[in-house]
Image (tube, protein in one colour):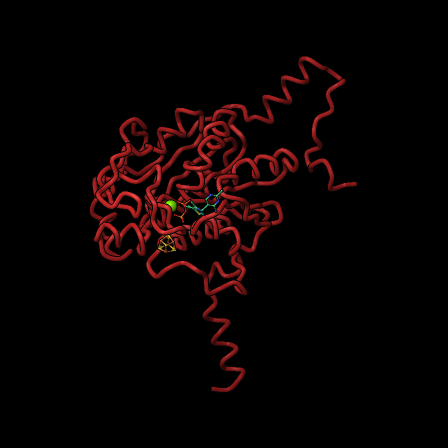
Length: 298
Ligand SMILES: Cc1ncc(C[n+]2csc(CCOP(=O)(O)OP(=O)(O)O)c2C)c(N)n1
Ligand code: SF4
Ligand SMILES: [Mg+2]
């Protein structure tokens, strides 16, 4: 094949979301049939479809297999320490209010070690889109039990099955004050992308849980086959109930997975509350943060 033909073949074959990825970092580290890449693809597609100004989009991850997502995206991206994606993103948003800040991380990172930051960020309605990939386990470090591992499911630290009650994440987020709450699986690529598009346009603490296969640890330790088998399982066992009461969204081991949008409401964000309050109590003495951030014009 001539060099010209090879070149045009490459151009034709470029993936539609390639411009959203740091292609020099590919191949990625994720295992075959892991679900994380699908979620990244849906997020990239949503960014493209909403037409947001990518110079104003920032992504923050903690540590874990899911936490690698920030490093692969061709955005202003931050790979922070374990459990600290939300506080890092909060500081970023407060200092640069014009940015659309997304937190993209795993269940262990966001609601295990990072659980305290998660609940308070939702309570204060910090303006963040939080995407949590829930594979029911600590993937990166060898399959330890997570605060999301379903009862009786096996993990490397609970080889005889988990006996700790897991979080119902949409209920946790909603009861702490999140203003947008949805759950999908990595099989629901169109609905997940639509949910990302919708959440990108909202403000406040927006939480989207995505159930996704960890083929290498969760599926192997529980003899569930590969990620493909889990996708089949989602196909057969996921039910969409928009507006469902979040108290009813617990996930049992290999039980039904209720998906949908459960909360979508407006409430003043942390920044709005702060600004209103200081205007009221300090009047002209209050100098708000410039809309384009405190430092960039200096
Ligand atoms: C302070 C600290 N404690 C523990 C670790 C080890 N560690 C790295 S990733 C991880 C779990 C990640 O699990 P999750 O967020 O569910 O991500 P996944 O790999 O499943 O996508 C742990 C315990 C660490 N890096 N830093
Ligand atoms: S260990 Fe699990 S979560 Fe991590 S890349 Fe492999 S399949 Fe995905
Ligand atoms: Mg995990």
